[in-house]
Image (cartoon, rainbow, N blue to C red; front, side, top):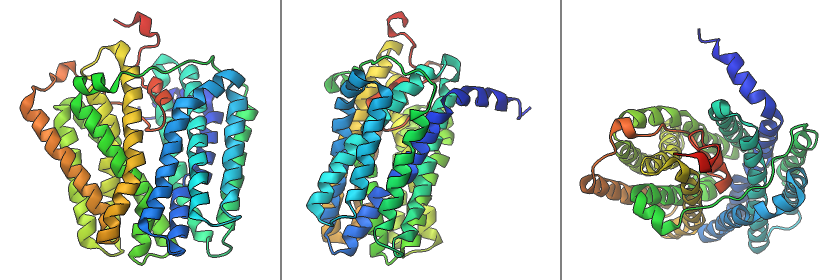
Length: 421
């Protein structure tokens, strides 16, 4: 019985395999750049605030690219736009090896963010066009696996840093450049350009306060972790190989718990699951602070932190969708992606400020504080309003926190909003 699903999965994935290979290669090459840059800046004596500012530049670029890249894609087409974004990303990756300066590297990270957002816009709109209604969930799962596995595996490129300082940048640039080949040679017809509307933030907050606050706080926590997690690990005395294991463990943990928590949220009041996830993130953050040294307990706490925090964004989207008509879901998801991105752009500098006074544990003190604040807000919302009846709740879907274009990949989104009930 269990093998009967394989042909269905393969049939859904096969038409977009070149796009999934492209995102895997791109993430394997570019997904560890935040870790590598943080390690290099920390080793050069840069303060946590400087590393945080460089991390903030990347997320600002991601926001700018999310909002603007669609125009370029509409003007020149998906393949040309993808090639342009990948080429610029590859060139900026090599540029880090030319001269080490925090201001220059901050500018390059801004460029990286714009390029990565452009790649996401190209691939996600393409995937949405090619995925059939019944197989959209399978395509989305394949996309998420390719993205996160590539990102996690790429962390181990840190291990070659000591052999030759420029080598990680060269290998990353090679992988990023090679990611253009599956797209350039694909026979998949590019989709027509399309826009992505968003609900006004005030309207979105009125509809789902917990969804909006939860997405923003998740951005604060994960933006801080991606930008400063390597700095935290290095200041605990970890070697580069241990830093790679720590970062990849958190990412793999993030993949592992998303589906179990989602299934749980489909059966019970989704707000309780969100509150539980924030409570668990708070406990994991405080546990990491208490452990304070390398070892298996730290890795286990890191995996728990990743599993709970990575699940929060799709949980918040699902909770918001429970209060929306089907034709509003894509626009709401677009707004929640932007709320997450705004939090991610703010998180690195805010966490770096705490680390300036509290040292390495300040990162997870900041994360625990964010989780605690969201936990209190979630408990207040539970006390103030009635839950959505279980039979009226939508189905949980694992969604990427990339660009507003990813909202259209939601299997629950109507194929034609005009025809939605």
